[in-house]
Image (cartoon, rainbow, N blue to C red; front, side, top):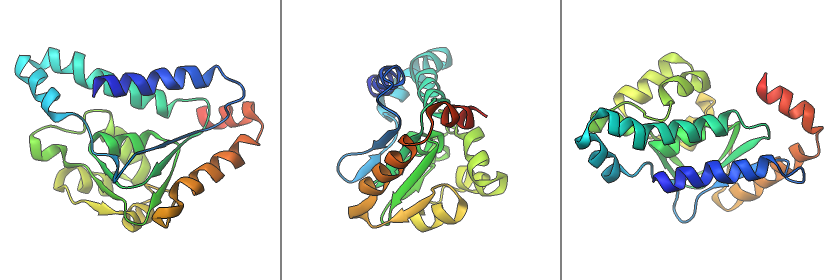
Length: 188
């Protein structure tokens, strides 16, 4: 939802200014990392017209994924379950990702007549290569954590019970590194 997108950006704004916080882990609750965007809200905006859809749906999503991608501290996705649509795009924008063995990824936007709306048409090819990205965007196969690792979409796959612990361990390791060097490497 727009409120969740704004909450993520607001949290990152606060974290960036806190020198004691040196890395970020984003995860989901329950069986999903993120089931994706609020399609009902998007359809209302689309019915109002493309300008409305861009202003109230796409732009907030772009703002959030750009903020994550360009964040000066490492952002790690702990993908605990489903990562569909906008949730998949959030994983794309994170600097690193650890996936649970049962995680499932999908870019099903094409099925509802749109393209990935939060920058996924650019980020996914940078993550996995052009041809693999086009296959995911155009033919909509859901892919599992093992395939995500094979494609280079996630850094590694761990048991579901260990996903958050593994992401926090990675964050802890990165937090011990020189923060200016980390920020420079992320921005480069």
